[in-house]
Length: 165
Image (cartoon, rainbow, N blue to C red; front, top):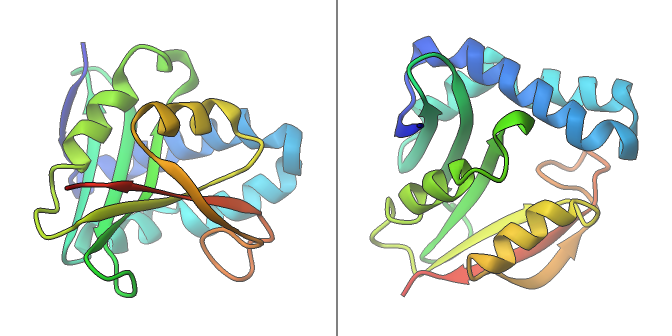
């Protein structure tokens, strides 16, 4: 059984490894292992995760069973989206997917922003499992972008939103 808790600095190396494994399992077939390794090195390094952990108006959670971290989630109030929170990351190790780990982390994250009226996210259009998860949790497609997360990624994404009211 996993418990969702706030992440700490001591978790970051394990979270970085989790993200690398999950990204390779999910995206190698779409973008190739080299592109995935490049993005995970930039986005999921311990220093990058440490910056997320330190960001004000954010929540960084892990799913921990006492032996290992099976998932992670990160959301923050948006700097540009009025009264909006952005779900930046929600990842579960492949061996623990479809066991409610993502649902539990998401349930925690969506309650962490009492001033937010909406939550927004970006998801790869070919990540059908993630899209299904988000649709099942009340998100709707509101747009798309040619470059997920940053202008240099080259990864297309659907933009999805959910009302938090």
